[in-house]
Length: 118
Image (cartoon, rainbow, N blue to C red; front, side, top):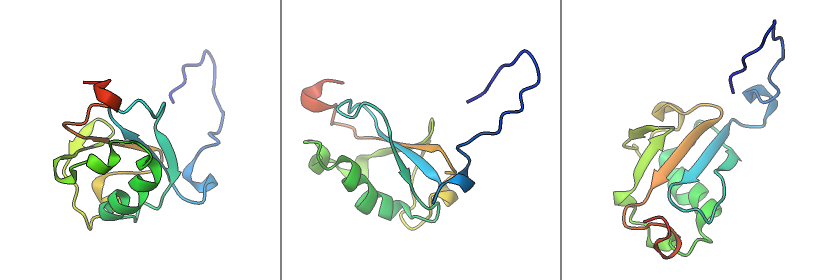
């Protein structure tokens, strides 16, 4: 978060990557407000997108009634606000993610619980 200060600002951030076991990745399922905020997970930037899809996302979102209905070939993926097409065997770092990046995914045809976001 940026800071505007009247004078010199010498505060050292306390959330740099070296202070965590692994870089932090924010993960958000667009239009699924049953989850109030993005999940934050410590995750190696060497994790592949295939592992994100098959191992990480189910742990975060499988409790949602629509999760099992996701058509993964139709999912739209975002690194922050930038849409990208994932390469399953490429790592998060190779897709441009770094400490405190946001991975968002949108599932066309699934508009939240009972269409609440459609």
